[in-house]
Image (cartoon, rainbow over all chains, first blue to last red; front, side, top):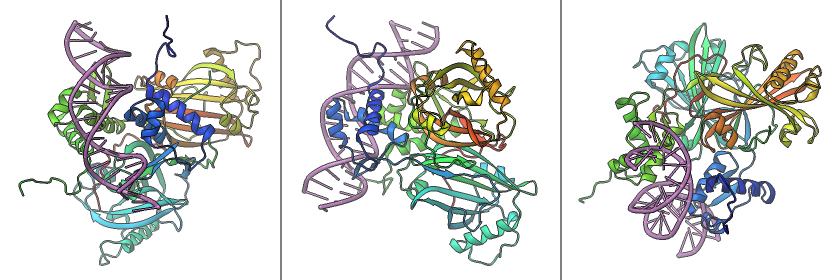
Amino acid sequence: MGTTQLESVPEPKYWHLRTVLSEALDSEFEVGEILPNERDLAARFGVARATLRQALEQLELEGRLQRRRGVGTTVAPPRVGVAVDTREHAWPGTADDAWQPGDCALAAPPAAVADALETGRDEPVHTVRRLRVSHGRPVAAELLYVPSSSVPGLPAIDAPSGAARARAVLRELQRGALERRESAVELGSAGADDAKELDRLPGAPVLVVTTRYFAEGRTAALSVATYRADTCRLTFGDFGDVEIHHGPQTQAS
Amino acid sequence: MGTTQLESVPEPKYWHLRTVLSEALDSEFEVGEILPNERDLAARFGVARATLRQALEQLELEGRLQRRRGVGTTVAPPRVGVAVDTREHAWPGTADDAWQPGDCALAAPPAAVADALETGRDEPVHTVRRLRVSHGRPVAAELLYVPSSSVPGLPAIDAPSGAARARAVLRELQRGALERRESAVELGSAGADDAKELDRLPGAPVLVVTTRYFAEGRTAALSVATYRADTCRLTFGDFGDVEIHHGPQTQAS
DNA sequence: GAGTGGTCTAGACCACTCG
DNA sequence: GAGTGGTCTAGACCACTCT
């Protein structure tokens, strides 16, 4: 007697904190508003800073918060719906397919990519780096692997790299009639280079979309695109901008 | 002089560790093999346990490792390709749509769901809980929201809940001709209930797939499915089981 | 009971942004 | 230079799984 247990099966502190903060975000904060700094928040809740950070990490993973070193923690806007559509328009190289071609190189791809393309492991393929921008912010970085056989008309003497080359490869790829595409989505973490382009730290969670393009029954190209998981909601079909999911709780049954 | 800097722009220890461990996993370990425990590993690399754990967390997020309390850390098998297909077969309630109907309840859904269904915020809808199993393991938990108007033929006097009720709702939903569906994928964290069904801890990363089913131009049902992000690769189209992505490094350009 | 991963603490220092 | 989030430490205890 004398002691009261709030939780007979106590949940971890950081999880409880996450819930409390989540509700506070809903009711007491506006999008873009700056939260108190971590040391103050930790003191206010009577926990160590590391524990508070665990809760903040959860909320950032869920797209509720945005943290920037040297600046502070702000309330994130709702995730952007990004179409990863499977229709005929918006093939790579179409006039506006939401991607900005960056650099291009001719290099041997990772072994797994070579296998999928059915090229030799040491055979160089055109590797186009592209960036996808939405609402003025970079949302995804892509590597598009195009075997030489998919772009037979590509001039051989051009500059072997650079943005002009990237556009040329896309143009030629577009000429060969692409028939079909298949995609897969999985969770990953941003490598150093992707992280830089996406304005995140290395290790930031990303949604990796791997897409295989087919032409004449064979794999004509392969794309590996990493989307910022904190800010993006990938839409298949034409989902519009309805906001459904808003946290981990599934408050039914 | 006298001191050597391995990194002129030093990367964080945990990130470097992640890379080292990742390579070790590729070359020196088999799937299912148990790693040394965290305290030993930390000592071996000369870092604090917390730092080592940060590296392990990354690798677990990437689906390379599997950690179980009281057991140990093992090398994870490649992610399972799970079809989130958009074809006509495999509508909810089809003979085999990979989902096992669980419970069913009639309850007011979260506000966001009610809005998407265009039902009143306090109007109860049929809420079916289902579990998706692949290779003998649970991979996803789903809540399927079905407004009464979508299942007009549903007997009113039946048991209002339970597995039998769930099957009845699905059967009636199947009768009304579904026309189209739209999906979105985003990162989330498992709530306590989902976590339990998926055999994970609360807060575990999940891929949340929100699907809207249309019939006669209106939203006939809405599904929120949470897939284990560590073990699943969601495939759209029919991607097969090719393994492409294998870590954050993008070793081209 | 022994051994594992999971949680939590109290502190330190670093890297970055901004006025 | 002040203030922020990011990294790291060395330790403690807890919850769980096996034998």
